[in-house]
Amino acid sequence: MPYVKGLPLAPRRTPEALALLDSWITDAAARPIQDFPEWLAIHAALTSSASGQQALAKLENLRFQPVIRHGDFARWNLIRQNDGSLIALDWEWGHPAGLPGLDLVHYFLQDARLVERMEPSEAVRHTCKLLEQPLYRNHLNKTGWGGKALLAVITSLAWKQGAGHQENKEIMEEVLNFEF
Image (spheres, rainbow, N blue to C red):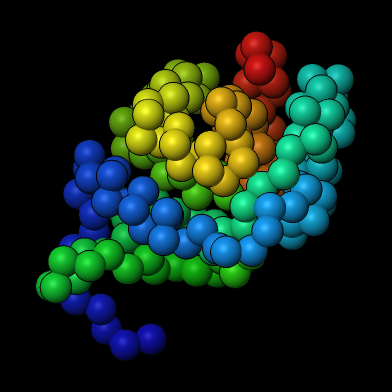
C-alpha cells in the first residue's frame, strides 16, 4: 500500500465520518438479514439465550440496504488527506455488500469504550443516545433499521462476537436485558 499522508479524524468530526458511510450505501435492492454475510456470526452469537433469541426474532423480519462494510470503522482508521478528503484504512474485515449500521455503531462504541473509557453498559447507552439524534437516525432509517438503535447495537456486538473479532459476550448479555 502506498504511504498515505494525513491525520486521523479528530474527535467530534462524526458528521464527516457519516458522510463517508452514506457514500458507501449501495444501489442494490434491500434484502433480508439472512442474506447478508454477517448473519451466521450474528445468529451464532445470539442463539444461546432467550433474550438473544428475541433479538433474532426481531431481526428476521427486517430488510436492509447493502453497504460497503468496513468492519473496524473507527476514528483512528480514518485519515484526512491533504486535499481534505477522508480515506479509510484497515480493511481486513471489509465486505462490498455488508450489513448496514455495524460501522456506525462500532464508530461510536469503540470511541466510548477505548477513548472515553466508559463502562460497557454506559458506552451502549451513550451510543444509543447518539444514534437517536436525527442525523444518525436518518442514516439508520435509510438503510433499514428504522428506529431500532438498540437492536443495531446488539447486532453489531453479536457480529463482532460471533465472527471472533472482539470479545463481547459479557456486554452482550447485559445489553440483551435492556428493553429493545
